[in-house]
Length: 156
Image (cartoon, rainbow, N blue to C red; front, side, top):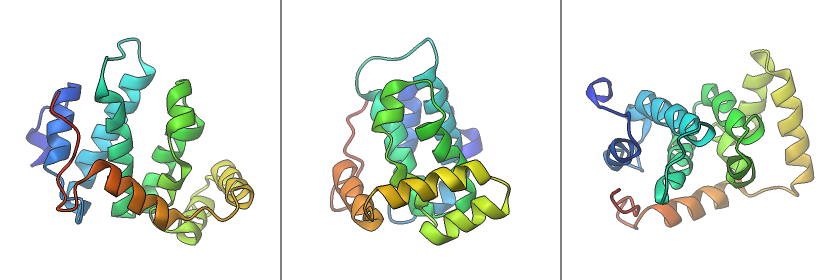
């Protein structure tokens, strides 16, 4: 289904995000990855939009977190720690990187050659005073979604 969607504009990506069930985003993982990559490129590119589009990368990060696949951690890490966009670097929550859990994420990174990422995230965890990742996820879900799972972002 995701392959046939036009994800070229912020408005089309927002409508695609509305199709994702926040309680079961896994079936849309490939589409979410594409949306995330497009949103990051848009944020870091010369054609930054105006308005509320900026929140879409954060919604997508939450959904990828909820999928819980450690293979997404380098993609999410890059948005936080390897971006040229100051707002993204500051506003992107590192907690989003740990959808597979702290231990599994760190282990996957180390096992797959992401030693710099492993070291930086291990340091971040030790300096963050036990960030409550589950609390973060609940807060972000409540911010972006109604109790019945409807995306709260207005149409573009």
